[in-house]
Amino acid sequence: METADDGAEPLVGMQTMSQIRQRIRQDLPSTAFEPTPIRALLCIPLNLVVIASFVLVARNHLPWYALLGISLVLGQVYATLGFWVHDVMHGSVFRSRRLQDAISYFGLYPFLLSPLTWRVWHVQAHHGNTQSARDPDAGVTVEEYRRTPIARVYLTFAPSSRNALGVLLFYPFWFTLHGQEILWFSHLHKDWEIESYRFDKRRAMLQTFGVFAFWLAVCAYVGPFNSIFVVLLPMLFGNMILLAFISTQHTFLPRSAGTRDGHSLENTVSVRVPWIFEKLNLNFNHHVEHHLFPSMNYSKLPLVRAWLRQNFPDEYVQPTLWAAVRTFISTPRVYADRSHLCFPEDPEKSRVDTLPIRRRLIAGSMR
Image (cartoon, rainbow, N blue to C red; front, side, top):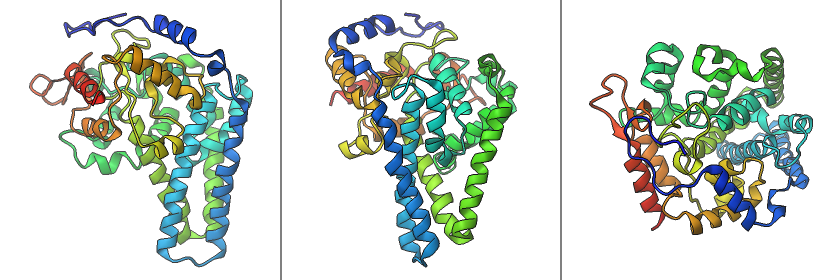
């Protein structure tokens, strides 16, 4: 395994990712690694709830508090659809990309995303280059911050120990906005090299226009006032749920030493949440497990978690979600080097070492 290239303390005792995967495959039943096509049907009841909500709101004059309740339910449904399509696009339901793309529309529309954009952004760029310079989800470096104006926009939104207001700006909006950034402005981020994935931007743009047209039709059907409660607020709530997990999975851990995907036990966090939230959010809190086996169905990830707890208790990071969120909003967002976060205005004085953060979270995981 590559260790820190800046003199930072290396992690001790780790095996390579391939060695860990091989051991897990030997210990778990082979059925845990097979696709589960039946999970494709999950989008049917979820989308029926969405359609029923639209009809209920359009045909009845509901009081504001009932509309707000519907907004909260739809927000969770949108988030669950997002986690469902995340699983689908990784091949845990179908191995066929055509089938994945075809049904992914039924889970991506709440976040104004096209299947092509999501595949390039997440499946290829993020998973192929986790926490490296080519990862669109990795925190920016001081160099990227200084040379890329749109990278500086990220700091306006991202919460940090100097930007408490970022909580209000980041969580309700950033997942959807970042998807639009990938589609329309990825060429401004030279490090990402999005063009290397043969991204058919024109087709992705047409798909995105279709999603926008769908939502305009919904707004026309339910009316301007009701649109606040069945379109806008649920989208914001859905973003908040997704980002509660996404923002805590990599952002305060070391970056990868090279340009490729690093070691998942080093640069990825799984979090603990109450059982009901695991079920509602399809085990998305099992994120180290997911990076070890991206195409494993979410229903099997707890098997990998149990294995990691038993075999790597001193290296597997699994704090509570609240502890991880607190860490995210109380640290800087820019990397001075591989293992240090900082504020770009004074990178030397504001340096925060990510390795003690990781050790602290592991210690908390054991309690």
